[in-house]
Length: 125
Image (tube, rainbow, N blue to C red):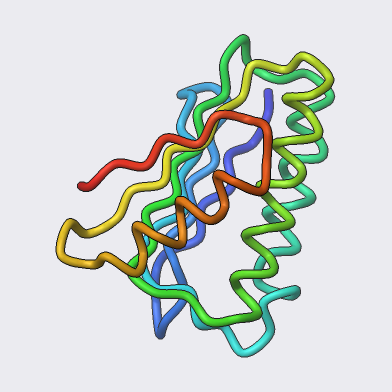
């Protein structure tokens, strides 16, 4: 049994749901933590264990309304982790969901998609 990681959204922290058994992998909301490395550390640790025995397909959803620069670094590092696994043959992709009225967030997703070789779908929600 692999325990899910659930962090409830509060005070500019995003909601995180990582559940191997249900195949749910999502971060959504606003990501403006005072210390991004502290906030995202459990997420990285969870995925390190998860990728020892991943599901046949891993679809990771990022649905962020806003994030600060330190969160951008954490998100880039997370996508890099997925990209590394993808390049080793793991079936993983990212879906970047954005508010259709937020052109900047769409462009941020497009920028990330240019940096990595794994599939990043960019879709309005």
